[in-house]
Length: 137
Image 1: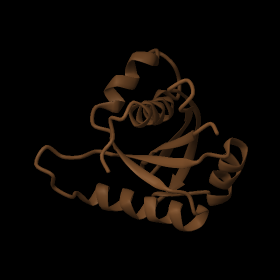
Image 2 (image 1 turned 120 degrees about the vertical axis):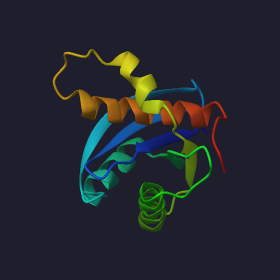
Image 3 (image 1 turned 60 degrees about the horizontal axis):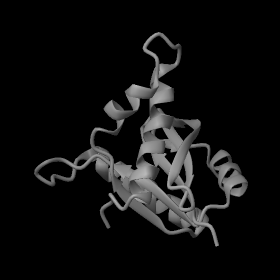
């Protein structure tokens, strides 16, 4: 069975969403979810998960060099718990450090809505890191 992975680049205003699969070890950005105080429209999340039928969800965590648990990381972990609680799928964390800078390579600076596109491309990078085994459990 093909492993489908849906990844999230969490933010309090926007959450990037991407999908990938183990067969090709590639990922593509699929959406930018608007969030209110870090909460997405859960029905919209459910629609994407129904469309893609993932076997696992992955969420990027911006680890600090010294391992400090920042307030942002605490919010991400709460989001991860909600994903698991609502959808019953395994939720893995992936080191997302520098994913935004890496995703800037794919976005033309003059494009309108660049920040949202960066979030979705960052989510794709997070999925690819998971598929390549570059994640932390």
